[in-house]
Image (tube, rainbow, N blue to C red; front, side, top):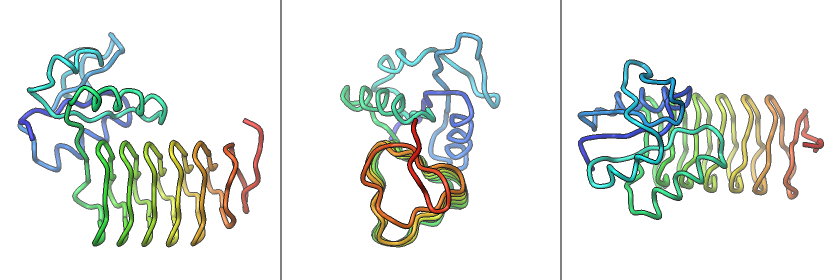
Length: 207
């Protein structure tokens, strides 16, 4: 672990990531990189350059990619990891992490989140504010679990999927890669085809 943390992305997700990093109290210095030239500071924290500058700090800093879009986050984080840069895990001190839980690089676990025993969280995931994941969940890489989502036991969520705020997934459910589940939706059967799903219970709609 280095003394400096560089957060890529200074917008909303970046602000929350910075807040978690501050509360973790592991780094002496926290700064941002952001591709918007008009952004010089965020939360009083300096923006020191654009994303491409990350590679200049390979041996001087740890990194975290705070981009809300799953595809963009994956692209940037994969590039960093391919070049051997260290991508950190951020876990808010108020989160509850059960026994035998694995969490991949670049994942953020927000305030009030619960991840229960024997669950596996992939790399680059967002486990957002006050969501709950019960036992034996498998969340694959670059998934976004939005605030207030509730997953029962033995739920599997495929790569790059996004579960909207307040959605609920019943136990023993599989959701394939590339899905969007709408806000407040209820999933009671496996989702086997990528797409956008809304409603109680969910139905597939056109993108």
